[in-house]
Length: 315
Ligand code: AKB
Image (tube, rainbow, N blue to C red; front, top):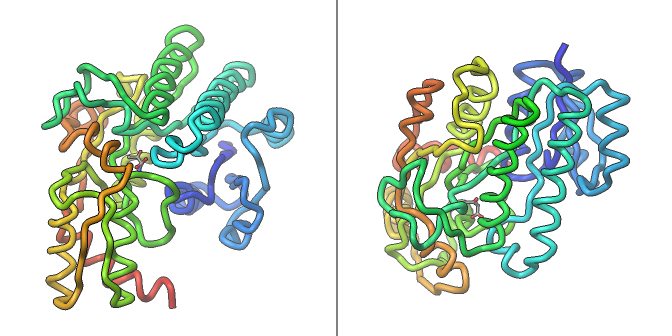
């Protein structure tokens, strides 16, 4: 029987992925953990433990005592926060991954999931339909840590047979939780402002095109990858993954169709430079060919779904 440990379960991805995993397995088979003790109330459907991923003794104890067979390691410092605390971002993102990979080797875990990001690309990467294999010179500490992490994942698979799987997520957009410290966060905040009837101040320029994905697609991709037969997972660094691409102006216009009085202003800040180094769009044909990936949502379908569900969710 699988026993799954989710680290960083209260984050933007973790909040929805942990629920999807419990639906798939059972509440007894999933342990949600997070640094934030207040997050406990979110997890009334499975066990919750307060956990700092850098507390190696505690992580090891959980893996050993609970008979963990799979780890989803989602804890990370994202791109914008990482630029404010570069050394801490490096320590958290890298030390934790290496420790989890070592644990996976030692305890012969069945599988490990670790998210990578479009942040592995950089200003010298071809920005349209960015290929899986191309120049990668990330210029953020987050991007550098994700690139190095990808190399370590592939290394542990090749050298030690650790079945680690990974996706290069675009900006993730969901309405069930707020993102924390990323460059693509504006695309979540904008819906909250529209629903409150407030003007939105965007920290990126109106024509800053970025790859994005609606959360249900991201959850589906993650579970599909993790459930794919081992031999279908032919890329052990991390898979390119695409959903949609849009600019701040385009998302604003898609919301304005529903809220005609909605207003926006653009005040680019330090996050503009991060966005400028990232691709406009992603070529994900390997994910499609190897394990059947296909996204379901485009910008209009996502806007419709969020504007319909966000008010109910926060009632
Ligand atoms: C961020 O903006 O830092 C993240 C990401 C694209 O990895 N959402």
